[in-house]
Image (cartoon, rainbow, N blue to C red; front, side, top):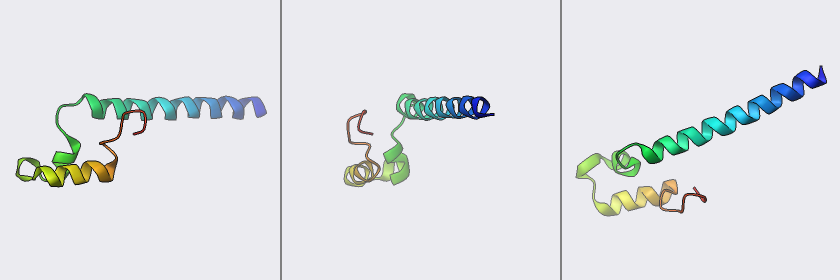
Amino acid sequence: MLHFLRRRFVFFFFTYLLSSLMIFLLLRVLPGDPARVIAGGREATEAQVEEIRAQLGLNAPMPEQ
């Protein structure tokens, strides 16, 4: 039973890690700027976009994000 639980936990951990990594990379690869979309698209000012980037941490280096 312990072997089964350990195996399930390891599988869960790697699945969670891989899923998180894939979502992060997809957000980086897809065209467009998430901060600009949240701010309202082309009508948003650059100051609004920068403020949202700072709130979401998108202006930080990739390892820090």
